[in-house]
Amino acid sequence: MRLDHVRGFVFDVDGTLVHRDGDDVHVIPGARGVLERIRASGRPLVLFTNGSHVAPEVFAAGLRDVGLGVGDDELLTPLRSVQTYLRAHAGSSLLPFATDAARAYLEAAGVRLVDGDAGGRVDAVLVVHTDAVEFAELESAGRAILGGARLLTGSYVPAYAGANGPIFSRGAMVTAALAKVTGARPIVVGKPSRAAVRTFAEQLAMRPDEVAVIGDDLDLDVALGRLGGSRTILVASGISGRVDLGSVPARRRPDAVVDGVADLLDWL
Image 1 (spheres, rainbow, N blue to C red):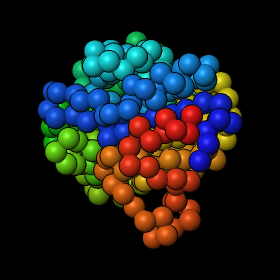
Image 2: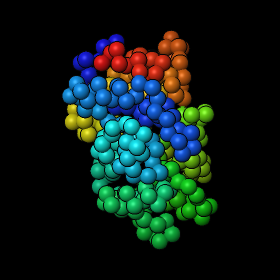
Image 3: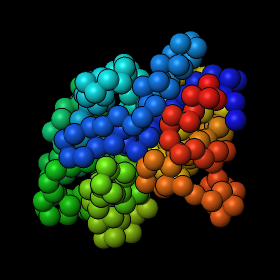
Image 4: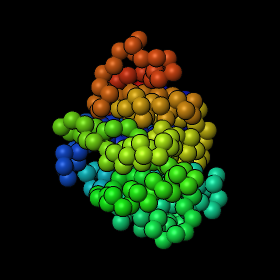
């Protein structure tokens, strides 16, 4: 496959460009070279991770610390794409399940956060990564959802790739609890979602069908690319591993599978 005609790129982070082992971050072989070659060609790129415990610029700084040259505005997360979603639902107030850092980022971005116990109107409950959850908070959110609030979640897949195997998603756990007690169907605002597609297309300033989406997860990265009509490449260095394309339904199938991101160097 050649990628000369692709105008922009969207990369997943964990399992695609890096592996995490606790607090240690290891760059996957070839990741630096691929990003550098794309930049040398004059084409833009963004990284989209469903990680949401810190502000996007903090993620970007952490990647720079390990040698991946990523600008703050090139790092996208559900904390960015939920804002895209909210622009289509003007005036939405959020009851968040999030870390203090994520709350501070959303407030600084102008998102109206509310407390479920304060008696005010709750238009949506947003679940992203959180460090701790109280049952009283779950009950307040559940009542808000039964009262008409939408249930938004950064991601609803059970795990993502770590250096030593899957890392369970706390956001998915909380979302599942709220979905169970309310019967609500969660609305994903991270990967894969229309909000995420619009977010990366706006950041790249191009149509989604001009973009290649590269990642390690069929249910997140490939699904994101297919939502937007983008070229999709699955890397086998992460959670989905090496797959037989013939066994994947056409609607979920990537355009190509490579062992690792380094294999893209020959296509650029």
